[in-house]
Image (tube, rainbow, N blue to C red; front, side, top):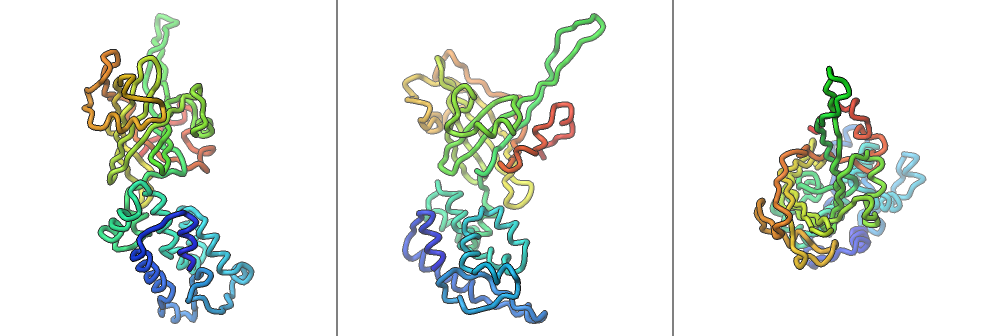
Amino acid sequence: MGSNRLLADFALTGPAELESALRVKNLQYFVTQRPWLDLYGINVRPVAPYGSISRKPYVDPALIHRRLPDELLFEVFARMTPYNLGRASCVCRKWRYTIRNPVFWRNACLKAWQLSGMVENYKILQSKYDGSWRKMWLLRPRIRTDGLYVSRNTYIRAGVAEWKITNPVHIVCYFRYMRFFPSGRFLYKNSSQKIKDVAKCMNFRASKAEGVFSGHYTLSDDKVEAAVLYPGMRPTVLRIRLRLRGTTAGANNRMDLLSLVTSGVNDDEVNGPDEDILGVVEGWQDDETHNPDVPAVSHKRGLTPFVFVPFEEVETSVLNLPVEKMDYFVPG
């Protein structure tokens, strides 16, 4: 079946009993009757995967469906991101019914929460989301990996008085950038550069001169624990605690910065920048440091919430505007 082929594409395997149960559920989906459409003389059929028992010869009156075979359309949907699937579902009823197929949302969920493991994800699916992968995608807190989380911070710095009658001040603006990956790693950069310039270097190939550091994170419900190591003569670890939320269901486009702590680590505690520093500092207190030359500091400023910006919007984001045009900006 199409669901098995899609599952193989993502290299995901699961217990046989779970697969058989899912196969039965997919068959029930394909043969679901919608008698209310008969009131309008309309018979809308969702796109069935190639080889499905629900595939029958059928001529759709729409031009795109006459020119584009159903099996090809199904493969196109299978390669879309969940957010593009949501946009495609607004095209017509047939596409909306097709995109509700649990196969698409299952693969998206298993990829998004791959750190939890397949068996654990199936348990959460049945216990909290009534066996609906789409409901799980919309309601379960999830870190987005298709863009950057940005925290915009400002402060006032006193300038040099050039005249006796004036005391100039300057508004300083800087950003915290975070890019997450499904593998449990993330990239962090603290810079005054605009997001359209930073997005180009937020990858693991970035040089040290670009100031991009890698770390590890964990997600538990809506709480995010992250840590990144600043290497050097006195290695310093940055510990970050965040709370994930969204302005709408399934958006996950905000992160509240709960705490930001810097402390020192011993040279023998870390073997390199790629080590899981989060495992090293797990269980540390906020005032704990393992290097007396680097005291533990809990930062109380620069804790503006993170706003998510997709990659396709980095060039047009309002975060690229200068300081004097950003007085209205509120993360929400």
